[in-house]
Amino acid sequence: MKRFGWLGRINAYFGNDEPHLAAAGSVALIIAGNQPFYPLYVAAIAGGKFWPALLTWFSTPFFLAVPAVCRRAPLSGRLLLAACAIGNTMVTAAALGPRSWVELFYLPCLALAPLLFAGKEAGYGLIACVIGSGVGLLVIHGSHQHGLAAFDDEQFRALARLHGFSVAGLLIVFAFLALRLRRQLRATTVSHSGH
Image (cartoon, rainbow, N blue to C red; front, side, top):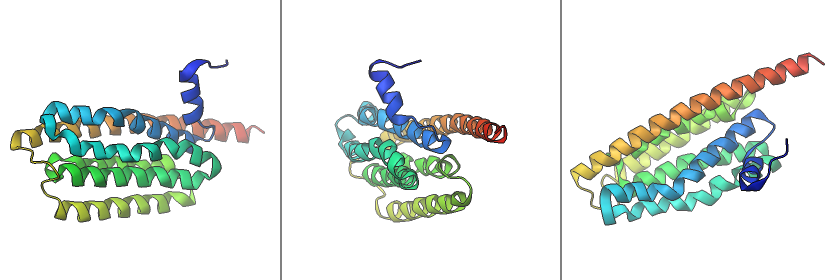
């Protein structure tokens, strides 16, 4: 069935016939779609102190580029997504400070590895995600304790709750994507074995 309208164009751009690349496109869409609203969540908590959250917008074009890069160079596209996720977490942790618990987003960064990489690439992909997340955690955690804005204790607690719920939701979405990926890979295996 042919898809029409802007939803169809978005689906066509972020979609892919290869299961791991389709997962990469789905993750890129989820993150890029949420980023415009993230500073609004922080503003609801911290009022005029929300401005450091605007720094997350710098990564949005890179997330939007992931599907296009995946089509031209599949491995580069998947590595770009992992690098964007880790880099965005580092920037946000520096902007808001570790007391906001934004570093919890390194968990979804690690969870990206099985979604993006398979076979011989799986081990290297996991190592890259672990090293990238570890470096980000060590560098930012030790040097930017308070972030760029003077949040008070209650605001830090509210930001921590926001990030905790966000990470939990993202991990649940990743679990559903992993199940979809597994079904797609099984269907591909059955299809190939039938020929």
